[in-house]
Length: 153
Image 1: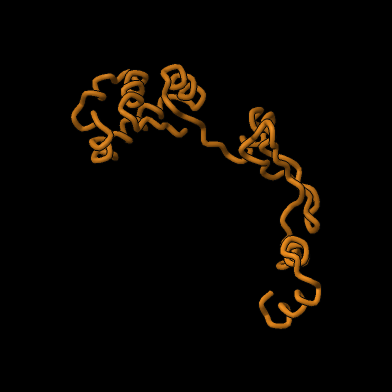
Image 2: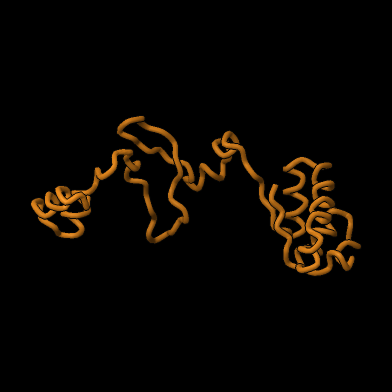
């Protein structure tokens, strides 16, 4: 679980959620700078609290308290998470060598200009040189040939 309570207000909410409101006024932790100087100690206190709860409980308690947090997933959990599926964060790719596989989708999502995965990047170096040099850059085939002969491409 990632717990992001760096800002003083968020830290105060975290302390209250952990049942340790006095930590927010402790001079070792009362400011962002002080927490940085005593990072090991405060991280130990938070870790000790977190160890007494499972991830779902931490997520629920901290979300209710308005503390920024989020789970750290294993690969299996990413593939099982309904939010990943709903946001199309895993989509089918097709690789010429390996065939179809699930890979990352396009992030961020834009309503008016949605992105899409059109192809899986090839492993073959220079496989798109003709498209880039002759198509996008407007070189002729013979100019591209000269670049190849000169070792530029």
